[in-house]
Image (cartoon, rainbow, N blue to C red; front, side, top):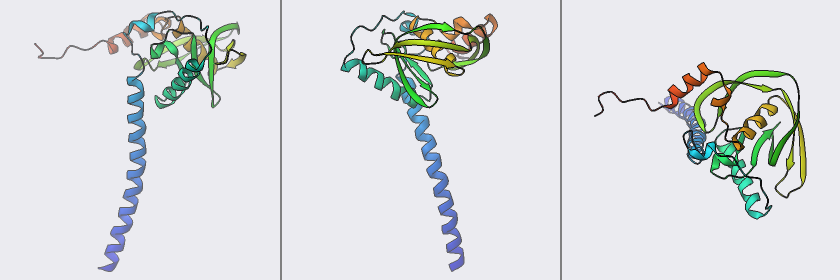
Length: 199
């Protein structure tokens, strides 16, 4: 009888460990969904608008960049543009080899000749991956949240990330950059499907 109780206890412990892992995963998923709910989604007109240059470098700008960085991580993304949170300002955040970066008024000043096609997703177009051709290396310049000049020489995957985020600031989405067939398939997924039997 005593042995049996010990065995039950061991099984229960293993179960608790599994529950803890499951709990962490569920929490991550819940946080992601909450974050995505705060990111403008496909169909929102702001995603088609061109962002304006940032002229004022103040506490508000620093707070916006911080908020965007947190949101990007909670949504499990690698980049996020201000237009995706409804702010028409030329700034985006991205992950560069594990480091969080903020780039204000970004401009690509030089790019390599080589291009590569790869699948791209977008936090504003959930559950859609489409092939997009991008140059494989870029130099991108801008300023930080204090208005100090910064510059990054990037290759893949970061070069792809910054091209994607820069597109957002010009109201351009991955659907505009992909081939017609992939675009059609993606749009079919994005359109609400008619419900059978609905009146």
